[in-house]
Image 1 (cartoon, helix red, strand yellow):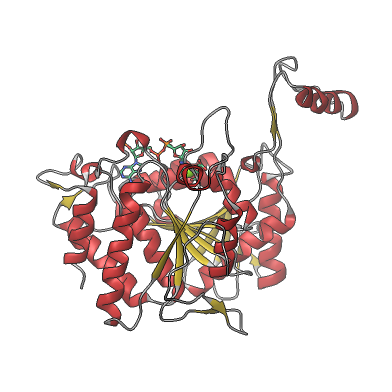
Image 2 (cartoon, helix red, strand yellow):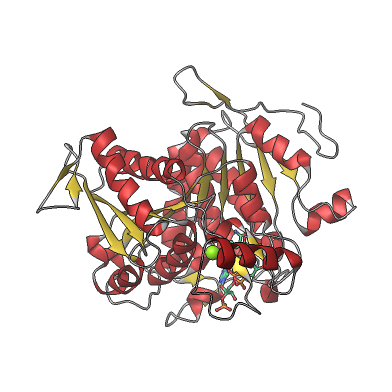
Length: 416
Ligand SMILES: NC(=O)C1=CN([C@@H]2O[C@H](COP(=O)(O)OP(=O)(O)OC[C@H]3O[C@@H](n4cnc5c(N)ncnc54)[C@H](OP(=O)(O)O)[C@@H]3O)[C@@H](O)[C@H]2O)C=CC1
Ligand SMILES: O=C(O)CCC(=O)C(=O)O
Ligand SMILES: [Mg+2]
């Protein structure tokens, strides 16, 4: 494969797909990585070092990742010039090598470029954003029983108000949209039509069903008890309300779910319960009754809010991992839940745990669970020993403050 400005490693092979649709992972896969803006420069090298150490320890040199740097964000502009924030090279490399990992990328507020993170998800059609949220022993938490939180969020990743279809107030485009809404559609409830900006919220049956299907498949494969559809369908009836209805429809039509207690909750033949809850109630119940929730299927913006809120319950976004996946093409882009935290950039200070645990998800995805467990165990031991980065240290009595790179080294030291 030829790229304009990517250096392909001399050793290593691309991950393929077998006839049955599962990944065909060579012993020396090439894994493209985007370093990321802001704290990306701190956490990405630590993540690679920890992963390399775990793979070496687990497989004694038989397996090894060949890392290949690809570019997006500020480093891409520096590398490619011409204001190139997301080069074709990057998209082609992820398609060619199938599984990649990225650090966070900056998105300016109120103007400037649209989110590169969202663009990557949309352009590669990575429709499921999978964010597991579980408690690691010893982690400081603001809730009394953080160990009760064990959820996996499936966030729809390509649609919703998050897709970025919006028109700014004062432009001819927004005037055209408002004219259509008011004159043709007879909308009477745009409160301040002269100055309003307008955003559009597409939510489709296909988009909903493929996301809910992946959540149900995950629940079945991992012996989970329930899948909860989280929505605000009482207010946004045809977008979020339809998400709920299509979710139940899919469970019944494709998985033989039967209604329980008069519906709409239903149960699959395997016993997995499909239920729903309105998003605001859910956000208070994750604090008051987290044990009632297991796999979560939700829309894009709800999923964004929910992932940071749930992460806080188990210790903060410093250790909240994630993956963006298309289960048909096999393309997967692993990434931390947090952003670029610019005030800490370049200080070797922040917690690399979120990106490292995203790499753990990646190792599991590759079918290398031995290396994944080594990292998890190493991290749990470091946290239990109270050898942690600033975000945990400030919440723990008697903890030892470590730099980002030192925390990575502790994980390696404690791998077993
Ligand atoms: N997927 C992506 O690439 C994402 C990108 N972004 C982008 O990142 C930029 C900054 O966003 P912002 O809203 O500040 O959110 P961030 O997630 O970057 O940071 C918010 C706060 O979270 C804490 N935090 C974040 N990462 C870590 C870490 N690794 N270790 C410890 N604490 C951490 C810090 O808290 P404290 O100050 O309390 O120490 C930090 O100030 C924006 O441009 C945004 O669009 C945001 C989210 C995801
Ligand atoms: O793209 C961004 O800048 C923010 C994305 C985000 O917050 C997320 O995916 O959780
Ligand atoms: Mg977010």
